[in-house]
Image 1 (cartoon, rainbow, N blue to C red):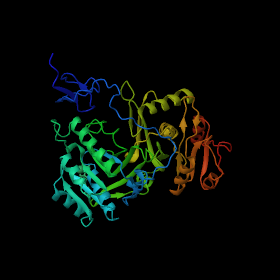
Image 2 (cartoon, rainbow, N blue to C red; image 1 turned 60 degrees about the horizontal axis):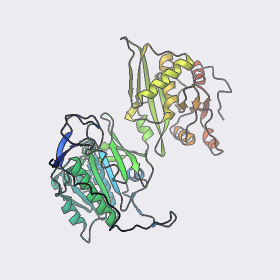
Image 3 (spheres, rainbow, N blue to C red; image 1 turned 90 degrees about the horizontal axis):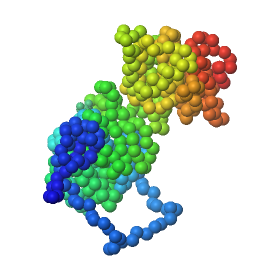
Image 4 (tube, rainbow, N blue to C red; image 1 turned 120 degrees about the horizontal axis):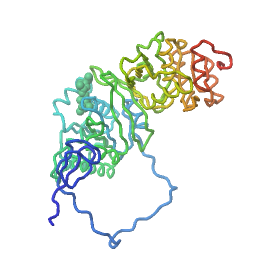
Length: 467
Ligand code: TYD
Ligand code: MG
């Protein structure tokens, strides 16, 4: 039997198939399987002969602390974990047109002005286009080495020169190709090999490598997922539904915390950092509308206040609708079920709409209590006391559970002029928290029933733990 000379690779998930198929068995994508030249045959059984023994070392030992390079763009540096580490590879993913090239051009200009030699290699735009953008951003004078190239062999030869830059941006990895492979740029095989070559080189030469990756409509980086495990840091640049601001989110970081977000605003003259995102997310907040509640959340290491809006209306159809934007719909179903079973609040015949205003996506369970408060407020048509923030997790028994970093949440709320906080009763307290609590009245909740008491105006002394 003849050996297969090619195989079929899904361009969405990278799964390999023996023959062409209209739908990938692995990820279910349609029309994503294309033919690629066969990979080299796996080596046949290695018996250990001819290998070189590796030596084991103890866990303990001093490595030189890698210095971090900072770009001067605070939000970017923070998301990287306090600057980029030499010899590390970063992947910046995002939808086309979201502003990746703009962000990285600004970051490189910032780095260059501190004296670090940097290069920006584009495979997508012509030099003239990038110069035009630099002029518009007011960065034309920054000493950034600009080049257009798509052949990885040429790029490696350039970076091998003695005066090579220390930080290199490759915009984008989907345009790069390795000339030993037959497949077209942008295919899984090319993206994977190009990234591999570049990363290996960067590690050897202690370069900081930044790869730009476009995200396909399914939400994964094209040549997808194949890059995430190869790089040290994965940052996604995203925005919600036509909002002006952009979020830079760390989803993987070998050199820093994940879940960190950086907030930027896209303006006519480039991206501007938003140092206080709470003000942005609360813009337009009115606390005289029922169903709106301010949630004191934590994004990464930073407290962020956002408005949660609920609307409850009688259903016009047989089945009630539940529509959620910016939160988890399964979590909403759980909160609704707990409200019904433990508190007798039946919204089964009502449409429920839940929206996180401003376009942020919340994944913290700490938002449960704020969602419940918004639902109760919308259902009863009653308001919470004005200038109130809410946070706490809800258990299936209707109990309100403690969440982390309550001190930071309360401090942020006070900074923005909030005077009341609805928090879990069992919130861990440290002596230094008391100072911050003094200026904000806290109502601590042991269970969801306590929350109803606030709406009834029947708040008694023992439910109010104002210090
Ligand atoms: P770009 O950085 O090219 O996106 P990406 O590299 O992620 O594809 O950004 C393109 C968008 O940003 C484009 O729609 C125009 C907008 N933009 C501004 O609004 N202001 C600016 O100063 C710049 C440079 C771009
Ligand atoms: Mg671009």
